[in-house]
Length: 394
Image (cartoon, rainbow, N blue to C red; front, side, top):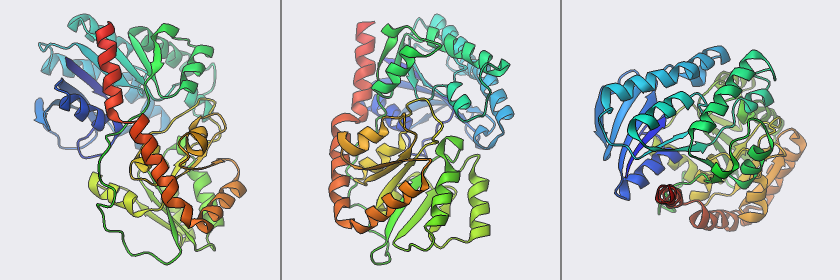
């Protein structure tokens, strides 16, 4: 089948679940087209063949470092920009399936127009439930004009989607009980997945201080990630030299991290704004424990994909989240690959870190548990199986 992927941000240089999905579709023999949003200054124009994928880069402002008003404007105009790119570059191609994640929720009209033109099926990979997550984070007032408008766009996106793939069963149940409610018959489980690579032991570990446990957090640094809470805990652990923290990434909260380092000069924290894909994975392989951080204010059961990066490298996970998400069930008793504590309780975080540092002998077993669970449940091949089954049933 011919698959059109719509991504607000995408790169062949960065390891993401979307890159793994695109490559798995390609490797299965499907023809893949990507509309790839990017804020890089220089990218090829028109259709370019990269890694066996026909890619059209769409220039967008960097919304991850923008304020909420600017970010909202980018989201609202993105659909039309993507539509013009399709008209200009791949309008005459044959497309059977259109797939796209949230964010954004503003693609409803775009998807409807493309479905009608190509006579194609559409599949929404639901990753963020917006605007409710913005309400949870107090970035938008409930029942405000903006909230009502984005809720309308959310509803239109659900209506335009022939199938809606949800990250977890808790996501499915949430959608069934909250407005706007999509047609329940459209909902199915579509978990985050990654390509399983045989890279365990590939990297030579960097020299470490004896008895020190290295915790790592990699990804977007935004309000959903509760960076302020993480920094608070790092500050309180400054005298506990058995634990060292590395943060890798950029985003709206990047300035907070940089200010913290300038003012506090923490000996237990290393910050790296950006790393290429291979170097980033090497840093993950060098670390002992992967961190997943989510705001305590979420009422939506989020399921962040970064946990899969740690599991793939057989790294145990410390999940520090709200009390709604089912990530804590994953790490504590489903995969048995780590620990959980709430992201509004610094004492619990510190207790968990100290427990981990005193039980170094548990790390290898927990990490291997996570990798085995990943291979059985979160392999990218499962995602493509779901998409192929959807097309056969349609």
